Image 1 (tube, rainbow, N blue to C red):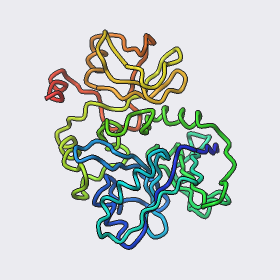
Image 2: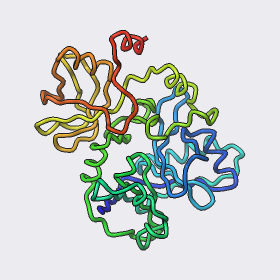
Image 3: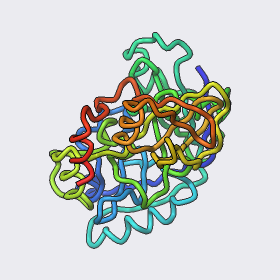
Length: 306
């Protein structure tokens, strides 16, 4: 089982008697639905529905733990404080922590194998080992958090291996895959990975999210790009016959993530037009676990433009 340290991650702890009520009213994730031993994706949105911060959230002693990018952790904590008002919560960014990911070497391992109890699955010297719910259960992906002042378990893999795993399963993160403030939750599949609560009531940006969900207007999506030659760097435009489809995100050799307009991709595929990034031909596919599809007709595509 590889263990890859993620040095670009930090934790924010939100604790206190009002922690759940406070976060439930501003974040996209439906907090009562988070199981013990689970880390679930989510976001804090702008009022216009764009992702301001993305994270994995899990239960912690006295509240919740938010696993986010280290370079924006303190700004994220400050933004949460803006919403605090009179809520009885304490918000603290912890950037000097050990955050790691691990996963099963055997892709055929059962879901039960990857969701063992914390007492059985937590490596020595760590605070928590939690199932990363963004990935299919048979992949057995976990997040590992070390207690303060502890070096954590010995890493046994590289960040490149972690990126390759994310690419293989279509799991996007802000930074290399999309810019904060530039993507809607549907664009990066939060509606597919359990990062959006559609029955929890109001939160920041909720009206836009609900409208996209009920009207079916999500047209920009994360797809998996595959090529026969090494792909160019993240941010390279993906095009077909001179028409922009989107851009590459995380690149792992001949594979990558791409945030693209799926209606335009479908039109290119139907017309037999090649799709490429910086001249490198590629194919685009929907992650196997996802429940969305390419638009079936041109009229459906046009409806998404309206």
